[in-house]
Image (cartoon, rainbow, N blue to C red; front, side):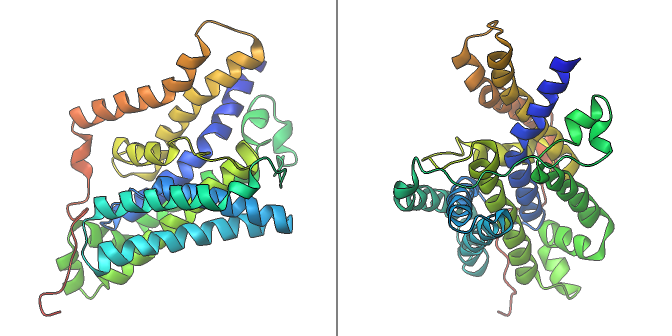
Length: 306
């Protein structure tokens, strides 16, 4: 039972970066904008969060700054994709290239430095509950935030008027415009909010999961987040399930190392999360889950008289 609790605890810790990035992508894509710049935004968020934490020692400022950088990069993508009507896929890929190169260049002087490390925040009383308390209530504050973000996103998109506007801009922007909804502003807002979550996801990696800065610290998790959104059918709760699945596969390598179990070679465990994610995505696409995509996803919209 202790081993199972340890594995599940690692699962939540390993899934949070992907979860936050995936929730941000869900929000952007439900508004009709594909953002393949997740990897670049996460890398810049990781670098910014580590640097601000290193200088100020404040985790709040570090995560806020990382989120702001992610949001700024997302809005840059929005300028080309929404304002100019550029190809969203190419613009997103360019954003990833920009974020990767810029973070590598700016972060050279930070490699090897010891910065801020955000510790776990046990919840009083709840953390004393056997098994459940260890798994859920002795986590880092970002884990609690990730769960709250998932619930808030589910409620916002499915139960609020503003969420309905976001979904309308993704499904049928012309109809949403005819009803008075500001399509471009709504898409910018959703993209910016999603970028904020992606920047925080990067900061989670450099401040919590593997404290410190190194080039390529995201290790492709931005792309995994995009894949999880498709697997989830653009639904926040299913995105959390996909992120936890990825987290479980990632946690297995740490679990086997910590317990001394050598059933599977380490290099297989390291690539297993990515291989199974691709296979799961392929299966979901084959079963038609891709049909849940917003009808206006990836399509620029301009008023006929503009």
